[in-house]
Amino acid sequence: MRSYAAVDLGASSGRVMVGRVSADSVVLREVHRFPNRPVRVPEGLRWDVLGLYGAVLDGLRAAGPVDSVGIDSWAVDHGLLDADGALLGNPVHYRDARTDGVAERVWANVPAAELYAATGVQYAPFNTLYQLAAARSTAQFGQAVRLLLIPDLLSYWLTGEQGTELTNASTTQLIDPRTRTWSREVAERLGIDLDLFAPLRRPGDPAGLLRAEVLAETGLGGPVCVTAVGSHDTASAVAAVPATGERFAYICTGTWSLAGVELTAPVLTEESRAANFTNELGLDGTVRYLRNIMGLWLLQECLRDWGGPELGPLLRGAAAVPALRSVVDAGDGAFLAPGRMPERIAGACRASGQPVPATRAETTRCVLDSLALAHRRAVADARRLADHPVDVVHVVGGGARNALLCQLTADACGLPVMAGPAEAAAMGNVLVQARAHGLAGDLAASRRLIARGRPAVRYTPRGDGARWRAAEERLAGR
Image (cartoon, rainbow, N blue to C red):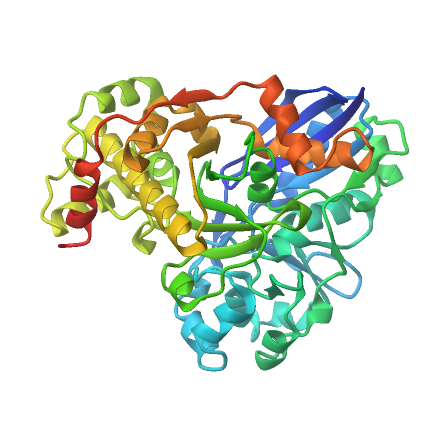
């Protein structure tokens, strides 16, 4: 049995978990959890990446002896390094306003349809491509000789070696999902120098050894390797979906909901682009065909606005509120920025002629009904656009613990929901490391290992779906 440290960084919190893996079991233990709070400075919203790195070191110190370290995080954001390898300022947060209106400037050179046909990445205003376009005229960008996505930046500080992990690179809108390499045509047409990126790595590739200074600070006995995992946290989470066949959809729940299906080839049609589906790369040659939904961010922001009340009583109150009384579009960019979320939800309900939530329980129910409705649309659209049959929906990530959300998702989709594991990203992270050491098999074998050890909770759909269809039509204004 070997031990692996999984550094799993989400947009609102991070953790370090230790996974002990043998040929027939995987056991996770959380050793350190810490907040991930963006900081608003005069120039905009930034990540406190030095604080995150310090927390990672604290977590590795608490982990004790490990055979390997793997890092996953949210996508698109990055740090810029100068010629000496030093970080040029704190990384910009994807919710920063600097990319407002930038996409239209990019499309003037490469029309949106051509960009999608080349990269398969959905439109989101914060895609790395648009961030680069926004930064091009800045003094900081003028000094940059290297761009490292967040997990690769932390890996660089741990090891001194630079690389760009593929699953995360596929979210930049600069990767061709058919060749699984850089789209040089897109980069050339937009004047992006791909030498800015470090060489591509694949999940399971070695990413270096912990530096002597890191070993001394964490108390770990060397050598300890860092292994490239599915460093986009969704790639690691999907790898840990305990599916027993291919006819499944997944919803990775957390700050975002990522809902879709797993394919062997991208879907690059104009209809797919219009539906705003993305083709991101996964393990073993797979494609994560999915739609980004605002996710539990809506509820997280409500809780923050309300002063952090306990979630349990809110959910019990929400369960007593009549279903589908009011719903909002959980994918609407109007909810992207932080602040005043209950007020914005109320405004959206008012503008669409629906009852305005008057209590915290009613607002919470509005959020959960809206998420379940968005899950329904995403799963149905993925099945249709990819011509991929779905018999069951797997909900993984933090939302798997939310019984009300899981039941509403089953009701909305008209399909059984299997909930768990909640720690899917960390589990997928650990299993890729274990594969590199010969302790886990391919994707299907890893999923069987998870399914044996952690039975999922089943939610059976209730009702005939007519009320959910009516809510969809009401939201669409029909």
